Image (cartoon, rainbow, N blue to C red):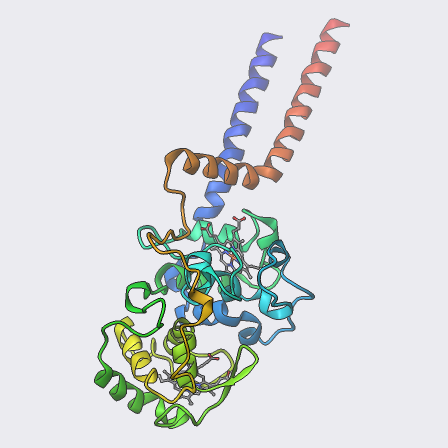
Length: 324
Ligand code: HEC
Ligand code: HEC
């Protein structure tokens, strides 16, 4: 009798170990980020609906309705950029106030880029079921997004004045050289040739460069989904090259020459910018880790419980047989 109980206990421990280790194993088996396409990831981040040429999901992204400050609705609410920002800093960056404010976190952390596991967990809804994109983005797209988030985000915070939105430092002559070489053929020497839609308004490069330099930079570096635009990243442009072109574009006619600083940034808190990312304090780090583990274990725990039940039933059967 004792041996049976010992055997069952041993089995239970082995099973527990197997189920605890399994989620870690599956995370480690993620496709290596290096194999992906960073520019494609950046375009997916901008507008995966346009890039994949798919019908947008019905209604608003579920998480969108947890905020009330932005009045956007529909397809736009499913774009990564609508929540996490053109500067990738979410509520801690350019979206910290104004009509784009949502309170959603950023993805940028200078000290420790998000891990592939964290990104995968976010995109498959393991951390928060309302953030599940797996019905829309296949493994390849998720890997491209992960590669972009891990190695494509640029920190432009020290290079753009938060009030005037002008580029700080920078080389305008170099910017003109690059622009005339690669951009003016479509946009015109003064950026006025091509008019596009921005915030439901007709806009030219000069206006965008002043009103939303972060969007300008992302588009310059990674293009615009659905167009054949030249892509700075493919030309081998550095982060500073992009800023130089932005600086030059800020001299184009914009119709905004006399305007006051945009109210969208007036309420921005000064002082240290806290970016999203892994929690800084150890205790909350452990708690977050445990939380993620428990959520990840959900199914496994259920199966585990079922197996324990089965073993107990066996023990009870054997015991009742011996007793009779
Ligand atoms: C409607 C707003 C919204 C959209 C759209 C959205 N996210 Fe998020 N995202 C969030 C929120 C809110 C969180 C925090 C979720 C939580 O932990 O509960 C988050 C968390 C994340 C995280 C984890 C961050 C961390 O520090 O752990 C990643 C990575 C991420 N999102 C990437 C993306 C990508 C890529 C897309 C586009 C495919 C996207 N998000 C679209 C709101 C959004
Ligand atoms: C082959 C033509 C072409 C070239 C070359 C080109 N663009 Fe564009 N660009 C476009 C088109 C078309 C759009 C408009 C997309 C739209 O209608 O939304 C655009 C839009 C943009 C936008 C704004 C996108 C938005 O919606 O906010 C920026 C910024 C931009 N281009 C910068 C550049 C820069 C910088 C270069 C040089 C590296 C460049 N473009 C080269 C075709 C081009």
